Image 1 (tube, one colour):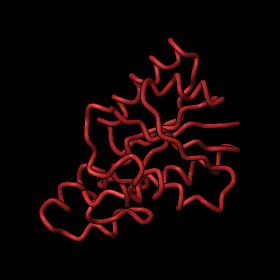
Image 2: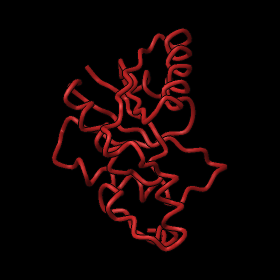
Image 3: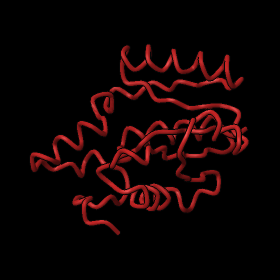
Length: 155
């Protein structure tokens, strides 16, 4: 069975990687989808995110990394995914994701599997990493893969 794990992943944190790795324990294939809005500029370019995440899983044939614009559920269905994977760090995440799960089930007939963050990763978010980086703090311990720490130097 194929699952679709979507996010902006700006950047892909060790928390995101933990969720993806745990999803791979449940599903035969995992598509990691980098969703983006062409009207919003990310800290890292979509190409940078795509290359960095692809490099993490380059030896695992069960993982495919893509970028997309539009509704996550439509892209998941287009790619043959049967399940949406979502990570949840806390009750606020859970409530938001539960709402999305209901919509995706009712409108698109897609089920969602929510994977709770491991306690050691529950405080990590991409926005936290970007904020720390903005103020010159070392964020290497929180980023998975080979993300340039000066993302504005576009590849």
